[in-house]
Length: 79
Image 1: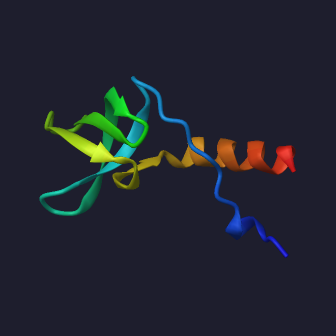
Image 2: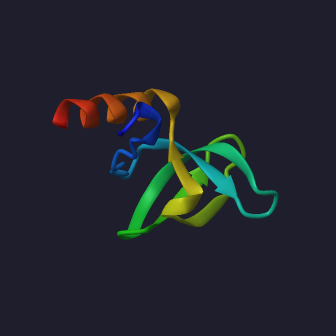
């Protein structure tokens, strides 16, 4: 059985996309924008509220809620 809470949609991140990223100094999530895609799993982001830049692994980035909802709907339609 696969409930909706178990779906893990594949999120494709693009340069210019607004996301939430985890700042490594305090481990809190902040609004950020992807500046560069370095490879499949790392991205340079700028924290939009503060201007700090950080290289983030995919695990330190998550989509905004509205983008996550779209990805889940897309995954459901594929099944």
